[in-house]
Length: 140
Image (cartoon, rainbow, N blue to C red; front, side, top):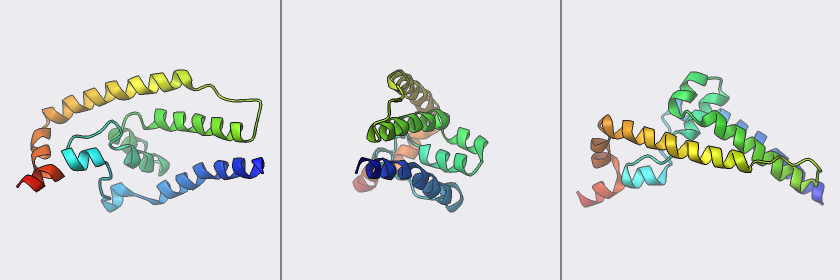
């Protein structure tokens, strides 16, 4: 029964990659799915990761890095975590250690988000917040 659990976990990543490859929010003008951005207008640290991942899986590296600079490190980290979960489910002797990568990625996301917020507010982000969020629509 353990092999079935490991096999099902092993199929998750290829399925997600196939789904994200076929979902092209940059081409089809997909909706914003970030709850924080929809309600307050302020982008969260992960805003743009879905679009960046879709672009990366379709071979558009430049567009992917333009949307979110940490897409490639985030995908590498998720792949390591996925390998750890599958190896634990299959009870393999090899298990990747990803604790240091977790800390590094967390602090990278915080720093990158701070820089993005400075650029966001410097380029007219306050007018976007005032016009495009749910809270301001309810108040008007």
